[in-house]
Structures are given as structure tokens and as C-alpha cells.
Amino acid sequence: MKYQTFCVLTVLLCLPQRADTAEIHIPAATAYLDPDHNSACVAADKGITRWTGPDTSVTWFGQLQTTGNLNASVVLRLPPTTTSQLRLSIGEQSRDVTVQGHATDASTVDFGTFQINKSGYHSFKLQSLNSSGQDNGSVLELLLVGTALENAHFNMQPRRNAASVHLAYPVPPDTKVSAFYCEMTGLEDPLWSYYMACGWHRGYFGMQVNSPTERRIIFSVWDSGNEGIDRGKVADENRVTLVDKGDDVFSGSFGNEGTGGHSHLKFQWKTGEKQRFLVTADPVDATHTVFAGYYFRPDKKQWMLISSWMAPKEGRRLRGLYSFSENFIGRNGHVVRKALYGNQWIRDSAGKWSEVTTAKFSHDTTGKADRRDRFMGVENGQFFLSHGGFIDGFTEFGAPFDRPPTNLSPASMKLPPLPE
Image 1 (tube, rainbow, N blue to C red):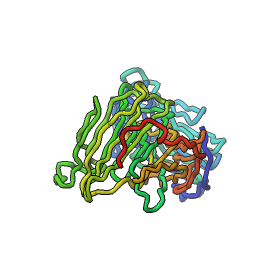
Image 2: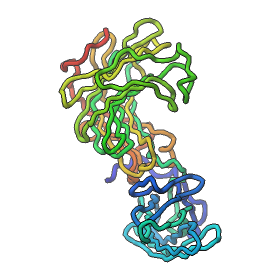
Image 3: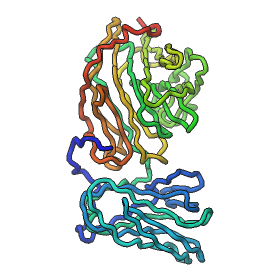
Image 4: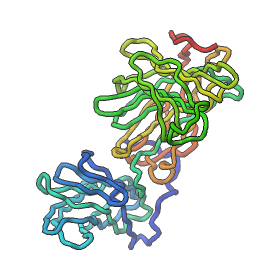
């Protein structure tokens, strides 16, 4: 998969050395395990430990801008008297090495020289050729030296999540938005993905992949105040309170990303199937607003309330409208996440619906320099967001996009009761 590049790759984690002596040390904690067994452990201070047997490979990814030679070594600790057979592959080239463990602190295992014949992202896969259950040692880093490293880029941070990506929807000044409607289609469904359709200044609403057998529809609303971690520290006057929730919906609290009220419906939404979301805002007085999230259940072909929450220190309607896609656990941050976002509409306080056909791209700090495999664009008449996969090219922060109008107003749909 390759997406269009919207700006020249000039902001790089570059190597300052001359090309003929370039050297780079890539920490083991930036690599990915495949399959991702819980038996092995990846930690910033210890690298990869408890790596056993031949079943799990260790893979780094890096972007090489220059062709040329590349000498590759792996630094590891191997128990004394242990003999280990390892293979390192760069693309289709591979080298096998037999390593003898000894009592020194760490060993540098030289896999020889590889030839890089094309620019772009490359994988560096370390595999065990040992028998099942054998200790393969602790991996500390991948060491690369050679002419192919000129202007090379690797993620050097232990945070292995793909960059979070967002699209922001402009709203005309002084518009009092009482409802926000968005359709969304998840095209990829790796674990630990959250595709968010309707976000606003006080909350977010979307769908999540929690496990191989569990998916959720999530609606959450933030408390007032500045507490970012522990909801137990939030005073009662700053807490959002549950007003109502739908059948089979769980409600509770959340923290560590701000605090607030959380709700979710366990529902096996389908990849490739369009999902429909609606958020409403109903100011009840000058300082309180009820925010509600409605989801159209495809199996029942009807709208249902996920939950509604009374938000204090508010009294206004929806602002700061956006959508996003998040890889919330980094253990599989190397795989692609992609979703379509289309047919966005807002309803003002007078009951008028207006279609939103413009959006602007942004990403989190991980996407600034560490992970540039993040994209936005227009596909099949809808916006798309994509991140992960170590795909060549990227979308420039702040890039605006326009999609063609659908003229399919929610006013013609059988919607839940909307605030006046």
C-alpha cells in the first residue's frame, strides 16, 4: 500500500556522520514481536527478554533514503554454555549465525553485509532457529553501519504506538451546534484500534477493537476542571453525571486522559460496514448541558441511546468538532489502521442541518518526528485516516481536504428526538 506524499521528506532523524562511516544504534525496545506472545517482554531499560524458541520473530522498521551497503549486527546477552542459531533478514536477504554464550556482559553478533537496492521502508527481522523452549537471549539493540544510512530514519522511542491521527471540521462562527452526525467505516481491524467518529470539546464517540472476540461502541464525556489522572480527586461540582443509558450499556468512570464518565456497548460491529453516530447537546441552564450519544444498530436497523450525561460548568452546545483514529496499545503499532469518515452534518439550534465537506489533518507528537506513516485524504467520496504500516510518504500537518457533498441530510432519516 502506498499513499501520495504531500511534502518532501526533509525533517529526518538524520545521521550526522559522513555516509561512508554512518552508524546507528536502534534500541530493541522499538522492535515488534510477531506473533506477540505475552511470554516475551519488551522494556525500554532491558530490551527484549524472555524470548524463547523459534515461534516469535523480532522486527525493526526503518526508512532508508539511500542505496548502498549495510553491515548489520545485533547486541544481545546469551546465557553461558548456550549455543544459539539466529537469522537476520533485511527484505529478501538473510544471514544465519551461530552464537556461543559466555559470561561477558553482552555480545555483538555480526550478520555481515547486506546490499540495499531501493529506498523506502525496510524491515529488519531477527529469527531464532533454535528448538522450542530454548532461551534465545536478551536482545539489546540493532547496530547498523554503512553507506545506505545517509538520511536514514528510525523511531528511536520506546513508544511503539502508531501516531494518532485526526481530522478537524470547521464550523461557521457563532453557529450553535445542537447535533453532530457522522458516518464511519473501519477498513482494517487490528487489535487495540479506536476509530472515533464524533468528537467535540467535552467528549468522544466511536468504536473499538478490544480483543479477538470483543468490540465496543464507546461514548465518553469529560469532567470539568484540570485533573488528568484520578477521578477520585475530582470535586462533585466538576463531575459529569449519568442521566440515562441504553439497554446492555455499561457506564462508569475513566481517568489517565483527563477524567469523566464512560459508557460502552459490547457490539460486534463489522469491518467494511458503514456505522452511523449522532451526538446531541441540550443546554438545560446557563451552566449545565446534557450531552447524548446515539448509535444506529445495523442488526436492528434502529437508533439506540448509548448514554447521556449532565456536564457542569458548561451551558453551551457542541464546539471543536473532529474525528480521529488511535492505536491505544503499541504492541502492534506496526500494522495499518484505516477508516473512512463521510456524510458529516451539523444541526444548529434553529433546527437547520448543514453538510460539512471540509476537514483538516493533524496528528499527535509521535507523528511529528518518530512515526511519519500517517495520512489523511479523500477516497470514494469520503475522508480517510490511516496510520501505521510503515508506508512510504506522509500527509503534512494542517493539510486541508474537501470531499464531494452527498446531499443526504439526516433530516430525511428517522432520528432520535433532538434538542430544541
